Amino acid sequence: MWEACGKEVLKRLAIEEPAKLTTIAYGLVPKDIFLNVAQAAPGGLEPDEWATLRRVLDIIQATAPDGVAPSLMFETIEHALRSEFARPITVAPPPY
Image (cartoon, rainbow, N blue to C red; front, side, top):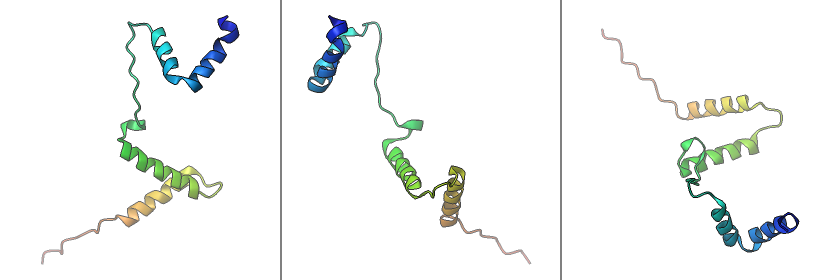
């Protein structure tokens, strides 16, 4: 019976009654196994940091000319950032 109908029943539950499907799945997990489901951004970034990085990546993808190597794109970005936020070099006058 399961071989004939099981797959379709699971599909229907996933669409029409996901809570019931979750309850069934939970009941199948051995009780001596601890499950921890957590959503985390790559690299341990905070959600706002990940959102900012994702925006930067989206801009790079949207503006990168065809055929330009990613390394050249990153060099261009690095140069622009260093130019924009460069700190002035202050040199004390020589003592006379």
